[in-house]
Structures are given as C-alpha cells and as structure tokens.
Length: 178
Image (cartoon, rainbow, N blue to C red):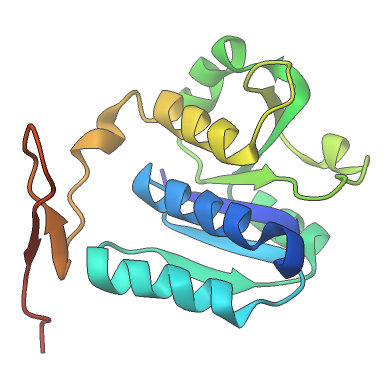
C-alpha cells in the first residue's frame, strides 16, 4: 500500500513552515509523496527536494490546484482518508483502513476545508476531537496505519545519516552516487 498526502490551501506567507513540516513528517513516517493546492511555492518544493536528496528515500512533491480532480482521480483505484477533528475516532476505523489493500490518499486541510469534501472521501478520521496541528494528526495517523514499522524504514541513497548515540550529535556523510 502506498500513501500520498494532499494538502489543501497552502498559503506561503502563513503556512510555509507548517506545510514544510507536514511534508517532512509525511516522508519520515512512510508516505511516498505529496501534492499541495493553494498558492504554488517553489521554495517549499526546493526545501523538500533538498531533504530527499540529502537524507535519501523516494518522496515526490507536486502542485495541483484542482483538489477535487485529484481526489476523483485517486478514487479510481485507491481510497481517500480525510483527517478532521469531526470524523470517526482513529482507533475505531484504523483496522478497516489498514486491512484495505488500496493505495491511500490522506487529505489534510490548511484554511477552512470545503464542506463537500466530507462526502467525497472514503473515511473522515479524527485523531482526537480537539483542535491541534495537521502535522501531528498526520504523524499519528501514519504511525497507527503502519503499526510502528515506519521506524524501521531505510532511506536508500542518502548522503547523510544520523548515527544514534546517547549524547551529542553525529551525522555520517556519504558520497553522492554518480
């Protein structure tokens, strides 16, 4: 099962760091790519692509302002999960989502989410029913979806890797592949 993230309504002046962090969390927690709508932001794309280049793995990012079309196209062969505090509790629906072999598009809002999205998706999922960050909601959702296996993920072709240690920081550098 592949997981892709759709970020609705990116606003560079307001959301630059949040959208960047959302995509970095998506990558680190096992998603294979992300699409964003709203305002095209080459700086966001460059930042995420630089992380992929240095830290490895396969993760794509693209802009597409037709979120309805993105969801409709995805539903032709996959399933769509909308993360919202108004959905069904994660712990209640995650077994059904996990057991479905379809690829998954995870939709997260930015500005106010259009009401019709609730009827377009396969699951409206609440990671708590309290206001909090879309970054935390996505990380918790992916952690539950992958049952913690994302922590074992190896990011191939990395130029940089953290060397775990009790104290201090150590990063090993590798030569780029030609």
